[in-house]
Amino acid sequence: MRALKRSPEGRLLGWSRWATRAKLGLLALVAGLFAESVWWTTQNDLPLGYAFLKPLWVLGYTPEPEMVEVPKGSFVMGCVLGRDDLNGECPAEETPSREVTIPRPFIIGKYEVTFLQYDTYVFHQRRNGRDVDYPEDADWGRFGRPVINVSWNDAQDYAEWLRKRTGKSYRLPTEVEWEYAARAGTPTAYWWGKEFDESKANCGRWNRTAPVGSLGKDGENPFRLHDTAGNVSEWVEDAYGNYTEGSAASPAVRSDHATRRVLRGGSWSYVPGGCRAAGRDGLDPDDRSYDLSFRLCCSSPVE
Image (cartoon, rainbow, N blue to C red; front, side, top):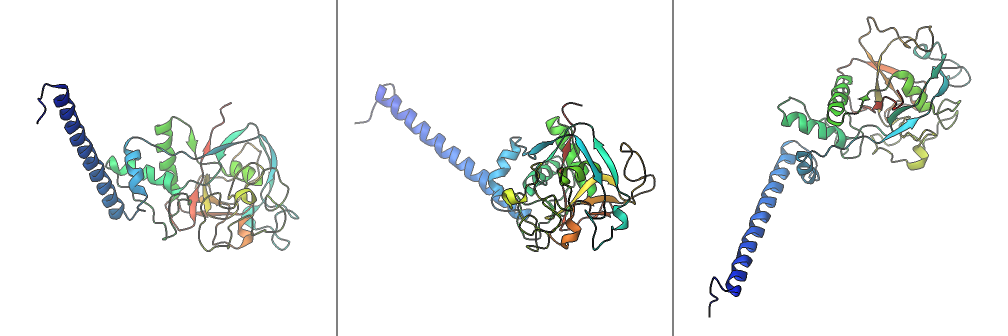
C-alpha cells in the first residue's frame, strides 16, 4: 500500500528521496571537481596530491613561510683570517671584513621558501591571466622541498604578491641580515664550528635538494634557522660586487652600476668551503638554476 503524499509517511518518503538525490548530486559535483583537478595537475606536470590542494587555493588558502625573530647584536661581516679563510687565504669577494651592528630585531624565514608556497603564488597569478610558469623541480619532488629554478626577479615578484595578499612586509633579506642570521652569534666559519660537518648541512651530500628542515635539530642554528649552509643558494636583496670600506650603516657593496645580485649559503652542488657563512656569489637577476632559491625576511614589528 503506497503512502499518501500528504501523510506523515508520504512526506518522510519525499524528503528521503530528495535527500538521496541531493547527496548523489553533491557526490557527482565533488567527483567532477576532483576529476578536473586531476586533469589540471596532469596538464601542468604537478604532483597528483596537488589535486586536493587546488580547491583550497580557489577558496583563498595561502601557505605562508614560517618566520623567526632574530635578536639585535653585532658581528664581523666577511672573511676573517683564522675564522673563515680557506687554506690561509680569504677570497677577494669576501673582503674587506668589517664590524656591523644590527640595531633592532628583525624577522626572517626559518626555512627557505618551499615549492608548495611558491606554487600557490603561481596558481593565483595564472588564474588572473598572468604568464607565470610553475618552476621545474628536476624530478626531485615539490611540496616541502625548497623551490628551485627561480630568479632574483621571481623572488621579488613572489614577495610583492605575498605582501599584497597578507598585508605583511615580506621582502628579501639584505646581505648583512642574511650573514648575521646565518652566523647566529658564532665566531666560526660555519655556525657549528671551524670544520665542515656533513651531518649539519646538505653541501655535496645528496646530489639534490632536501625538504626544508630535513636535518632536524642538527641543521638548526642557534637563531633557529635551518639550511643556511647548503641545500640551495639563496638570493638576497643586494647587488653583487667587491665589498667597500664604510660605516656599518652603509651598503656593503656600491650598486650604482652593478647588475648581478648576491647569492648566499652555497648549495647541495657546492664543495664544503662554498657553504661557509662568509661565502658569497653573484648572478644576473634573471638567472635560474636547479640550486637557486630564497628565503624571506620581514621588517621588525618594533620599527
